[in-house]
Image 1: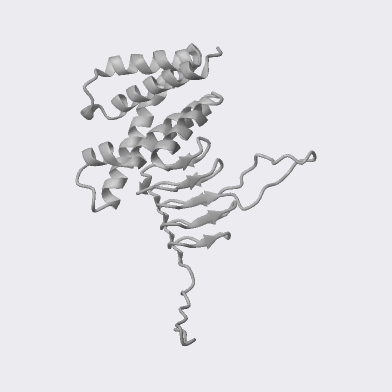
Image 2: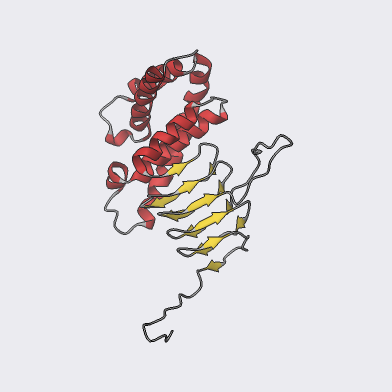
Length: 244
């Protein structure tokens, strides 16, 4: 099925509004059956009935993962007054709802639409997650503005990222015709890793379980489990030339 851009966008907006009703039913005034029908019909209209049939059984797992993401945010942020506040206000929840939906659609072989979903989330949250990234349970993004997670990134369970973190590629491999090859090129973050603000972790490297990566770090090599990595001490020079 081939739809116009505007009609496809309309179907996806309806689908995602109903996905939010399904994932967070306590904060919805829509009956679950009605929301599920809207997801099915909107997705069928944007793709086809086979995709819609395959997607519907995956919704409970998306819901379970989102509930764990919300709990992780609650545990990581002392400013969070309640899970309701997180669901209503935190951009990470929107970004993860769109990412987890898009990731499932990508696994089902859907083209273009997964990227449309995550790019829309990027535009409204400032959080850029490629639908191909693999992200485990209890994932927390605090603040979130400027976070970038590349296509082949792998993130374990219980990982926390702060604003401005980039999980990117360091370089590209090219085929015989000079085209960039789509091979694993983004970092692997094992369970329990924390990465503080404005840090760039680049290349197919592994950040070991339980590691803490400080802010403003440029990291291009693997580190073992339970590492603590911070930037070098800043050198301050005063007007008289003295440094500390």
